[in-house]
Image (cartoon, rainbow, N blue to C red; front, side):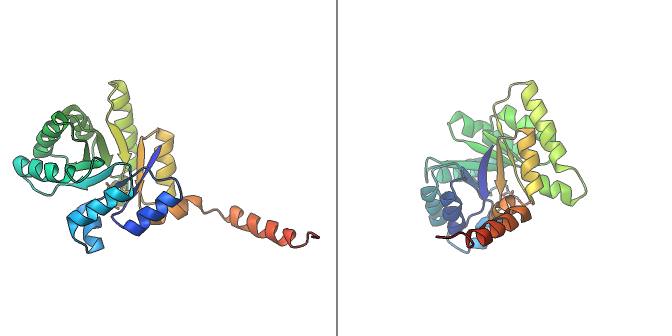
Length: 214
Ligand code: E4P
């Protein structure tokens, strides 16, 4: 499973890269706003920092305008992936961009039918938001299972990015299902490694090591 960082923070991306486990980045308008920086220079810096795919979301609502934004963002760097919301306008945009060889990440996926239609339009990736479904007492990972089954039934090449990941269990469940990608907030990275037995084991080994005669 590929791991993307769900952030627009350069320091976090650099740290993730140094750990050797990050394959790409996903941003969204809220994550961009958090950085309080100019948008285009920030995207330039992110795409120059990480060689893998970087999702950048269009914010216009009409297809022509969305396509114009997408073309502008895609021209920033070869690793830009255009994030498009799932709706009728979004589908049209995905089709046009796919025809032009521009990669897309169809976002705000909350149902298997949305994921199937996005794939039919030519999406490179779909992003089911598991955490937001759990937030309203749904089962986010059941959605990922459904999409994986449907894509498998029809040999669909669109990759599944498990998004809105909130805790390590989401990450493990995504890998069990065989999702292509999990995009995770930086804070979740450390949580994935933490284990009390690892910490106490290290402490005991170090204590015993000090007793060794040198
Ligand atoms: C994914 O591409 C989104 O940026 C992100 O995962 C949304 O997560 P949230 O529900 O925690 O905002």
